Image (cartoon, rainbow, N blue to C red; front, side, top):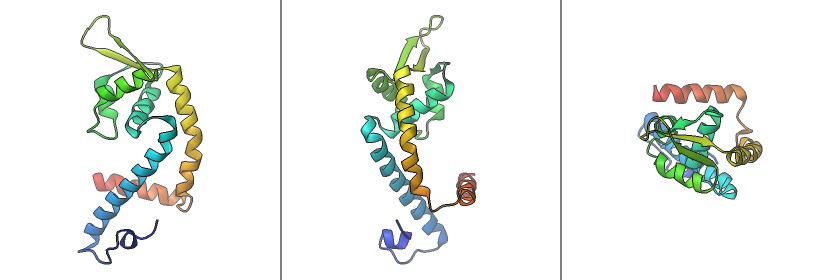
Length: 150
């Protein structure tokens, strides 16, 4: 991947602000495609992967659906549907809470934890995509992206 001008065949932009917006959107899409390809062999989507990571972070404690939704990267994701698909794959389990029938507790299963370990191994290849960016540059990029969302 090269300069944004070359990638989208647009030699000029109105100004640097427009160029940044186009560049961030284009790069986000590029990363999304890479992420989809990386997760495809595991039979899960990036959104399902996000749910599993959230549940691993709380393990061994359960989370409620609302807790998962709050922590999702993609706020437009349907957490109920994602959890159900993961349950069907035996990667998570759900139980209606004993003292409140409206509350459903959700845990990652051992099978889900094992899958995440295998995905973590594949991260070494994923990180190679960033080999030309130094640790200092990655920190600066994170700072700038946080500032942009400010």
